[in-house]
Image 1 (cartoon, helix red, strand yellow):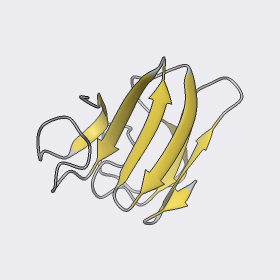
Image 2 (cartoon, helix red, strand yellow):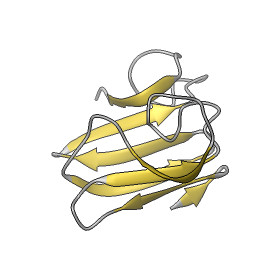
Image 3 (cartoon, helix red, strand yellow):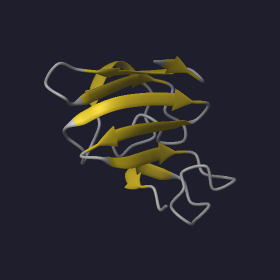
Image 4 (cartoon, one colour):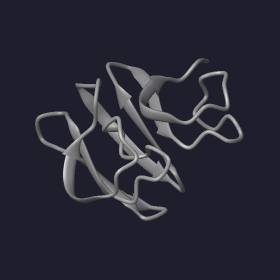
Length: 92
């Protein structure tokens, strides 16, 4: 999946890696450093689906939705407008 200057891949071992633009933490490695090679996304495993948007990334893992990156308008669904450098659980 590619969007907004970053790319994420779901690996066969049910983990995910991302690379590219990371100004909002959308890669999910705990930094805002742009990455030219794939890095592992922190704190989630058993990933079954991944999607990327402009400045944010979402994943389904263990039947729970996780999101990280830019959050100006609450797009991460965690009840805040705080950017997240690692994935947080979406609150339904």
